[in-house]
Image (tube, rainbow, N blue to C red):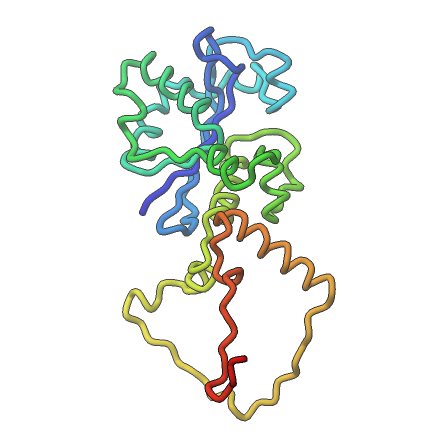
Length: 245
């Protein structure tokens, strides 16, 4: 499956009142793996960039003055996302701007270019109800490093969101499956070594490690709606020779 993690930066919050795209970042995933194939453009919005927007992303009108206009990059964007499943945080915002730009430049609706759209904000609200679910909050909660993120940036945020999405959707089965590199699926065989003669030390988990493990299990159980197998109580077996009183 081909997925594109997408983020944008804009001159403001409302495309209906004249705000425009000024940056787009796309990160490609194929079968849940980062391919290293990305798309990134700064875009000249052909208008001013308000100071409150600059405070968020740092992109000034002077910086964008020599960047391509949307009409110059729209076909590359169209080709890159075509038939892919999009992954966007707060998808309505980015999709609204992309639809506006495509309509403004007389292109078919942007939604028609892609197979599906996943909104990670909506998914996060279902997984973590009552908690903050901004990209920064999810990075902290899921252990995705974002210390280098001082300002919003479309490509950086798309890269972080890709890691967040993979962490959010890593099910119980994929705890093992994700360790495979696909060799078995391609019919390859692996050499094995006989380790039976080795004496390996037994390292017991510390109290801190046990507590951290319990926290992860609690989050997984909550995300699954209480359906994790380790919380199912199995009745104790009665020995065959036991006498029932």
